[in-house]
Amino acid sequence: DIQMTQSPASLSASVGDRVTITCRASQSISSYVNWYQQKPGKAPKLLINAASSLQSGVPSRFSGSGSGTDFTLTISGLQPEDFATYYCQQSYSTPWTFGQGTKVEIK
Amino acid sequence: DVQLVESGGGLVKPGGSLRLSCAASGFTFSTYSMNWIRQAPGKGLEWVSSISSSTSYIDYADSVKGRFTISRDNAKNSLYLQMNSVRAEDTAVYYCARDRDSSGYSGIFDYWGQGTLVTVSS
Image 1: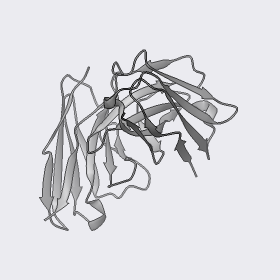
Image 2 (image 1 turned 180 degrees about the horizontal axis):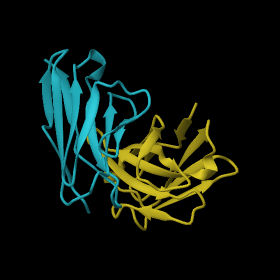
Image 3 (image 1 turned 45 degrees about the vertical axis):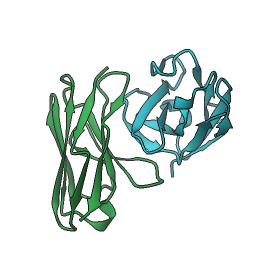
Image 4 (image 1 turned 90 degrees about the vertical axis):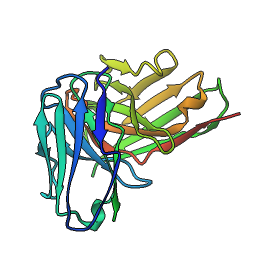
């Protein structure tokens, strides 16, 4: 199975900050990485697929990059509604696997 | 609008059975692969099972293989998960999620239901 390791597990940031979350795959997975946002008590929401392709309706302050084993999700100019937990997920091969999540909290 | 509504969760004893359902609307259900994904309380996301649009392809996580069965009824726009021989570690919110690619199997989950809680306890 492909392991997805996110860092950090949590971070504190202020509105307007630039935030970067990293995700490392246990083997090369090309660009088969997706990013989800989950707010408390809600279902996850797909933000980015194929490492850098923004879903329709997702604000442009979200961006993704990377290929191979190392990937990043960047939020440029954190907004109050962005405080949530973010998960990376590989869609290279089954079993589809997720990172353990990064909780973005208000500083 | 795409809607996925899960039901069937509840309290079940270890070793017992439960059947989850997911009612889909707002898209052509019969052309999309579908998935079950779960989240234990306070934990991360775990993929459970997938089924292709025509049911020709079915896959399970090792943790549920042989105990859970995924199925679908395209005429009823519904997805199911039959859970047998449940264990305490199956306690989780179970989400149904649509695969993003019509007529494909991409492993990208673009729409999710609100989830249904399954609690396994004596």
